[in-house]
Length: 101
Image 1 (cartoon, rainbow, N blue to C red):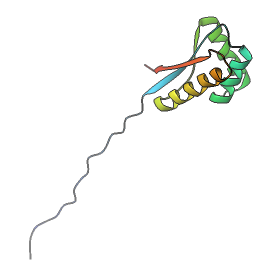
Image 2 (tube, one colour):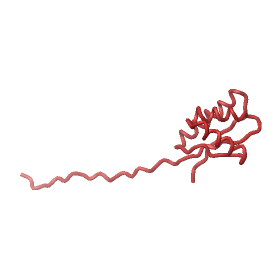
Image 3 (cartoon, rainbow, N blue to C red):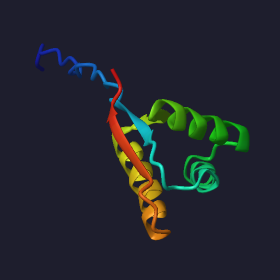
Image 4 (tube, one colour):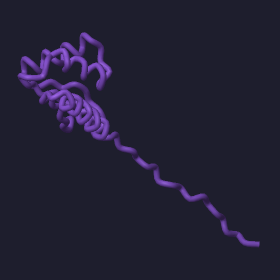
């Protein structure tokens, strides 16, 4: 008989880091109709009529407006889809993303 004691191995605790967040930004242009911008905001970002209108007006007055904050992949996908919706109708509607600080 052996006097060896076997102890279970302890696994180091893994620390998971929160994913970096990115802002989706609406850029103002002088050609895309306001109603169309509101429609895109409601469809792609699932915001209500009032909030979509406020976002659109803020971008119109200030030149840009943060629409929402998501993980990088989601932000890029939503910005691309919203921009493509404008291009499909012949408008220069543009959404961009940038890291949130």
